[in-house]
Each structure stands twice: as C-alpha cells, then as structure tokens.
Amino acid sequence: MRINARLDDSYEEKFHLIQQVEQKNRSEILKDALDHYFSMKFKKQEQTAWEKNQKLLKRLGGIISSTEDGSVNYKKYVAGYLNDKFSDR
Image 1: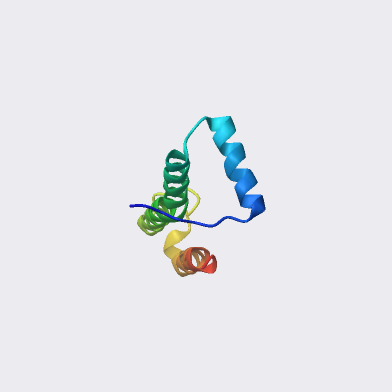
Image 2: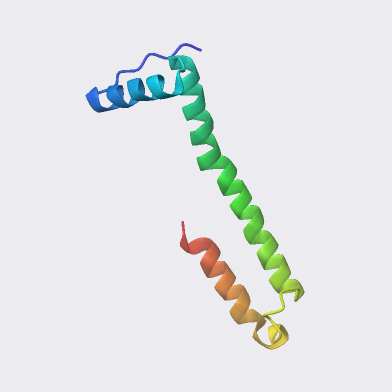
C-alpha cells in the first residue's frame, strides 16, 4: 500500500529527527509507528481484559488469600471488581 500524507512543520521536524537518530527510511518509521500504535491500543486492552477476568475468577474461587471473608462479603468484592473494571471506560 502506498501512503501519501501531509505533515505540518512540527511533525516534519519530528519525522526528520527520528530518521537521523534511527537511521531508518520513511517506510520503516511508519511501520514501526503502526506496530507501536497497534500494540498500545489493541494488544494491551486484550491483555488487560484477560487479566481482569482472571482476577475476578480468583476472587470468586476464593483463591486470593486476602478474601478470607469471601463467603460473607462476596457481593462487596464482586461489586468492587465490576466497578474497577468498568470505571476506566
């Protein structure tokens, strides 16, 4: 795929600085930028969702040692987890 983009002066300076420091051509810089953007936006979210689900499963299963009162206060723990999970959206 061929990409044609217009950059204002500040982005052009950044682009040229990256070229000089990294000794890479334009295509390599754009590929690196897309890889970085993809990993920050998509892979991190998937991993975070998986980790949050694992945390919930551990809490519900009574595996975490700090939930000795889990059979009594399980509703509080589940509510707290769901609040943590959905408050960052």
